[in-house]
Length: 186
Image: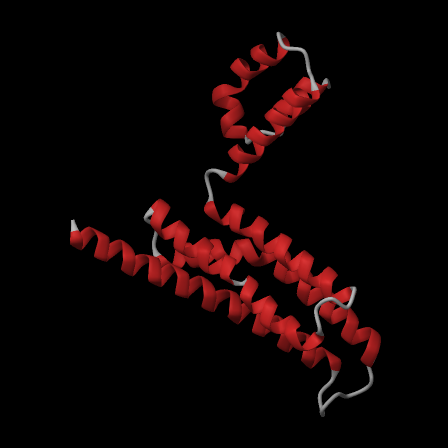
């Protein structure tokens, strides 16, 4: 497999099916410079993110959560502020569901599902890190405030799940209202 083939494979399958042969022909007649490779990769990122707004919001939330976790690990984000900044990052979910409603004219539940997809990796990572830290510091057998560590891990998971649904539902509902009023105003 050549570098040209690898560059083509960075594009989504649907795009490759439609435009792949043309792009392969263009790449076959061009010299692969770093600028051309960067241009092709930037274009493939745009094509991968283009069809679904939740992918863009997922990328933003993943970067936000990663920076927040690294900042907390290095002591730049105090533990008391971590929850505030974590919840503030959930605005990406609000945007994912609202954008899905406005762009695809979808229903509230489909848009809420899109925000849930956007949250899967970043929120699961955050819950996993919190769970590992709880197990490390508390151990399996030490009750904390009368509950086992499993209770606290499950509680974190449920709260994270509810926050995702709340922000997604709020964004989708607001976008639906905006959509209806914009049609009414026309």
